[in-house]
Image 1 (cartoon, rainbow, N blue to C red):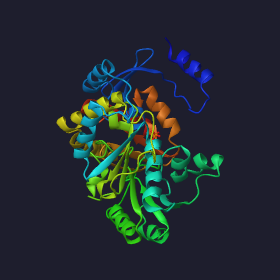
Image 2: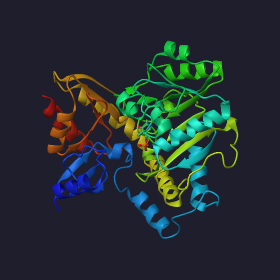
Image 3: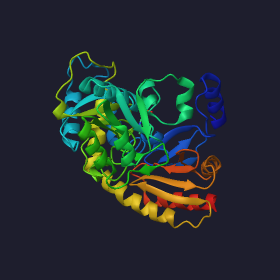
Length: 386
Ligand SMILES: *Cc1c(COP(=O)(O)O)cnc(C)c1O
């Protein structure tokens, strides 16, 4: 089968929301993926950040295989062995005492956080950040900043405000006794790969406490080892009221979660819910993922490989590069020009990479990537940028 055939079928039958790259991926292993014509790519897209464990990690494959032979569907109204096992494992792995809610995507985890914040505070106002990204459903979109995502769908959910990121004065001015929550990413992933500066999240915590507002952190992209810790909040030690998780939570299997700080107790039955929440396949994949993260110290690997990659990328002598920044293996190269043509040139050279806004080339390699592949990525990037 030709790449072109698959791409044209998708373009003919889908509603057309995605600008397709000229590649159809049919198989993956670790940090590598193969197209329909047998060509190999080093995958620094990781399914938009859902493959921190790499493609087809044997532990995830085995867990899904076993669970598929055992039980695929089980509503949250009935308890389940995989779910109970994963609940205990994630509660233990989180850096603060929490209760959990499970869903199937990042946007859904944000929606749940917004609803829980209203329930717990009786307030409606949410303060989010400029350049922040939280997903595309109506509540999550109301928190997302990018005007081109928002404007066609106005009016959105009322009572959202956006302040400059990493600016505590602006945040202090925006938060008051009407604020239900402050919603932030520890590193802005889609908004240009911008890590919070030292003291920002601590300051946000303090401002929330002064006004009885909740600190809602979005670790959909930064969670599960990506930034060099299991959760990015571990870099600062800040404790949120809620944490949103998704993307790599289940080794690439669709899943999301909200961790609600234990001090808020439990919510009332029926206040929220979803059909696929706590699905046994997702639970089995997530449990296997967490075990691999721990046993292979993938956060530690992200830390080491990320430092190496950052240094190598900063060593590229190109007049096109404005800045290289990142945390762990979440890395952005800010260019002086638009990024799109460079992404296309990299595809031709066997490297799949992402944009982050119009001028930032974003690398999200699987945390299991080898140094040989990282070396190739650096060489090819240096080549297309010079
Ligand atoms: C991807 C992403 C989301 C949305 O997740 P979906 O699964 O695409 O709905 C929300 N927040 C952040 C930080 C993300 O990177």
